[in-house]
Amino acid sequence: MNKIDKITQKVKGNLRENVSLKDYNTWKVGGKAEYFFEPHDLEDLKIFLNLTSDEKVTFLGNGSNVLIRDNGIKGYVVCLKKSLNNFQIYGKNKFIFEAGLSCMKIAQISAKHNLTGLEFLCGVPGTLGGALKMNAGCYGGNIWNNIVDVTLINKRGNLVKRTKDDFKISYRNVEIDENNFFVSASFNLKENKMNNSQNIIKDFLKDRRSNQPTGLPSCGSVFKNPKNLFAAKILDSLGLKGYRIGGAYVSEKHANFIIAERSAKSEDIEKLISFIQKKVYEDTKISLETEVKFIGTK
Ligand SMILES: Cc1cc2nc3c(=O)[nH]c(=O)nc-3n(C[C@H](O)[C@H](O)[C@H](O)COP(=O)(O)OP(=O)(O)OC[C@H]3O[C@@H](n4cnc5c(N)ncnc54)[C@H](O)[C@@H]3O)c2cc1C
Image (cartoon, rainbow, N blue to C red; front, side, top):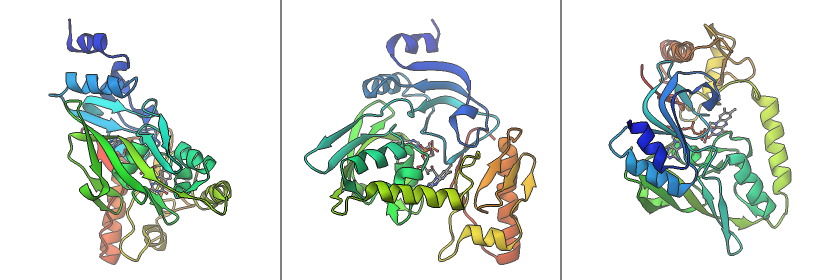
């Protein structure tokens, strides 16, 4: 019996070989995962990680902040977006959300309970796990602001609880041991005395529609904003809107967004990113850092 058959016998989730990752990231590009696993639930994830503890494992949420390379990802890709999407409410204002829940759902659930602080998540097209890793934020909100503690799973499938103070949290990044992955987080939220969370959500979504190329394949903002500056403004001032390499081009609506056409390869996007960084540095001496994470074989 081969390795995959042995694992398949012991887990309830879906384990497949050679799976195209194009449908698992918002740029819709990239190669294949050597092995792709969608756990049934947390228990299933524990069993799976225990069986693969010596192998390379990459976690993926909704793939909305990654550039998956054309040569794909070696080892196992674990995707949480279809599972680990339960939540519990404790007392009046404490939630535990699982890491596969979409940010949009989390915004809606907390708004429905008339609790405020997570409305900003409504337009972030990721999962909670990805948002925690990326320290997602916008409109003055930030995912780690209301966190009490988080639960991680390690490569052997054991759970570890950590408080916010255990992490080095910086702009669009949180450092975690590469063998640990988020499985849930608990939040302490405030009652919304104004009872206006649904209106706040509507306003945020309206603002996104008017300022961002929503609906087109992108990864949101590609570059981090340099201190006291906006990456989009820098790119716009250098005439980069519309600049293209292959099937990838800089959005005319928001210069920090790169749009991938159907024909785009991951390589087109990576080349365009490098071109922009080089041009910006030559013209302004500013080094633009990417927000998006590059994953997979070069
Ligand atoms: C149109 C658009 C608008 C966006 N707007 C915003 C915005 O306003 N603010 C903002 O901050 N971001 C924004 N983003 C970026 C993105 O949606 C967020 O960073 C989101 O939180 C990423 O979540 P994800 O599940 O898609 O993560 P993925 O892209 O799947 O993964 C991102 C990183 O997290 C790691 N990861 C994923 N899951 C886990 C886990 N469970 N444990 C440990 N590591 C994990 C991955 O390995 C990868 O390194 C936008 C993206 C798009 C496409």
